[in-house]
Length: 152
Image (cartoon, rainbow, N blue to C red; front, side, top):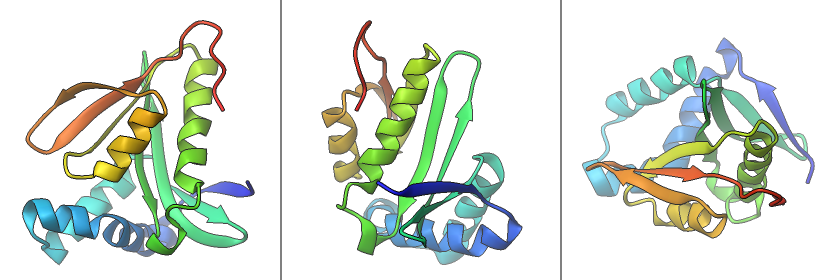
């Protein structure tokens, strides 16, 4: 799959925000209702804090992703794939890429997803993630590779 992850620059903030809104609006709306100003603030916070990259597929910007190396694990997320590019294997490809990276570094891969984001939770569970805990808002999940396990 021809996917590139391009480090985001300030000029990408509007696209990052738009990808957040388009990819997550239905889930956020079902949980909290939709407040555009509040969601702009939330997306901008992630843009600043989450090492944002633009996901390019076939020379098109199709989403955004972030990750962070912590002392003892790799934090994955957010991942926003535009709706017209969802269910085409892009999200699975990206998650597996980070699963392999975490495995190569000998550390677990952790993430969180909204409680009502059933599709994301199902994807992560199918890929071998386990639920560590939950809050009123999120599932906290982790993938640890078994010795000798091959990701992909």
